[in-house]
Length: 53
Image (cartoon, rainbow, N blue to C red; front, side):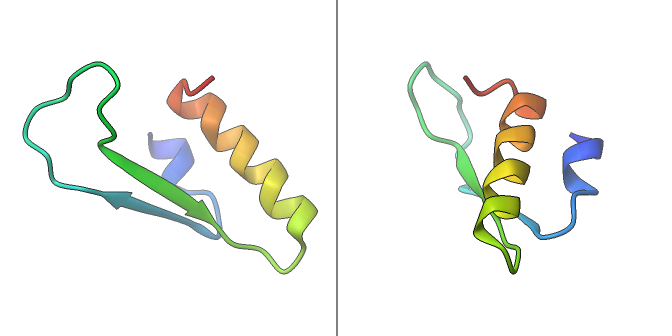
């Protein structure tokens, strides 16, 4: 997670749920950049860091 949080333009939105279950959404992340292609590329890299397929 440390590497992901150092990514410029990354914002984590955690929902504060107490219990994780299969299929339950615990939060999401947003990546901002002036260029859409760069933001998309960063988002794909962050997905890998979090183990999201």
